[in-house]
Length: 271
Image (cartoon, rainbow, N blue to C red; front, side, top):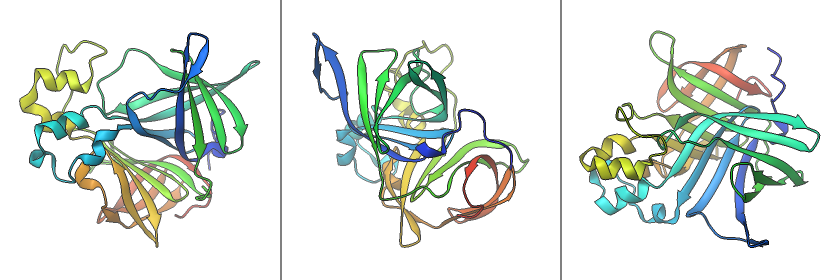
């Protein structure tokens, strides 16, 4: 196997749930919400999947996008979800983590996402944000150990990466499938998906068709417990992956079998 890069962190692999968001307000620490009822990161040693989902998504019916009401589509447009690589740099004052997005449910943003990591315990940390006055408190799901953690990239018929990703850690699996269209040309940086839908409401189904799902293993199968696509919630799948070469794994997922490129792998060669 290839040596892991310096910022690879197998000790962080797992599902991290945000317990609360802290904000400095007038010298005192308040605990407001940022509109997210559920926020989590699934980490492999290098890659991550991140969700911040508003409370209203629980009321969106688990139907295909074209069957949803306009208010349900408006709720989905508020979702924050992205995948990418985490880079951790050691400084005398601590560890600085940069969350480098490779694919995003929302349009490209203006600010980078980074924070100082301060561990209160092995399973609990505080992330002090660099670009605002907020801090996030995170706790890892210790009931589901990450003996194997990985990130795999889907390949097309020509062997080229097609944008799909599978990120796994312990009992959790994230599946990413990007939308099939590019953002509108000339769109201003910092626009949100809500802004896009306000300008092009007739294309809502196109812009919202971007999947980042989180599945949990139960009795040998993976059930989708969270997803940016409501119709995927509750879906049950079989999954297996066998690392055959340092950069190639044979994957069975969603009734398909074939090679996926290994972007990150820690642990035994089979899952």
